Image 1: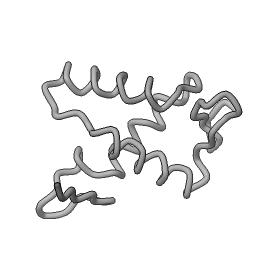
Image 2: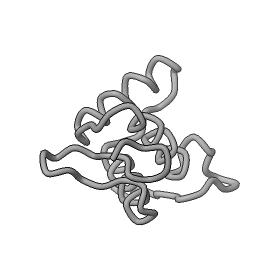
Image 3: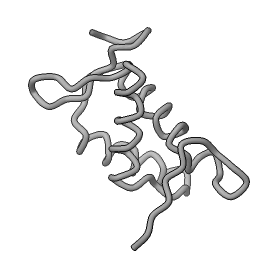
Length: 91
């Protein structure tokens, strides 16, 4: 199976399917508390399904977290939770 992951939206990829959008949603969810990747996946899956949108795959969520890590916005705590370290986060 070939998957195409796109950082930014384009002519063929809608904004809500881009990693940039998914990373933004993840960043918003991490403002309140640190959360594991599994919990984040199930949270986003439920959230997208409520809005009748296709939820991001687990791999897309991992890539979005990698993007946030590369931008120094998140880190992984000792207990395996993703924490927001960028502006506005709880360190």
